[in-house]
Length: 110
Image 1 (cartoon, helix red, strand yellow):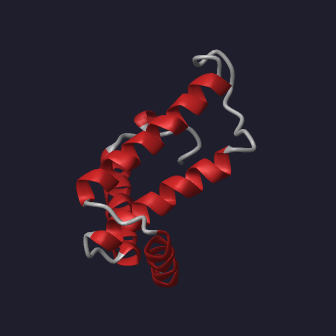
Image 2: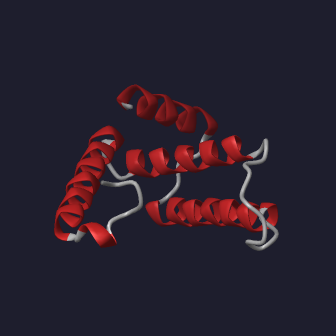
Image 3: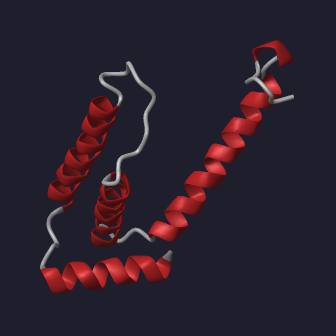
């Protein structure tokens, strides 16, 4: 992921896409909103199952680009941050599973 962050940073440099963290955060919110709008449209407001459109991958890529740009502009190693988050989520989920009685656990979990 470090190579990916470097590639994103170089691309942002070449294209002049750097902005303040606040502006980058607003851009992230707009991109998440666009994804939500796509889901609402594709599911007819939740009445149908979601099936990703051909544009879905590009929209997720745009969101990832914006997220990595924000990390880079604020001095965060995106690879390290993601690994910490995955570890934290894993530990939290396994702790919850140990605390739940079997009847309250997710289906097929044991």
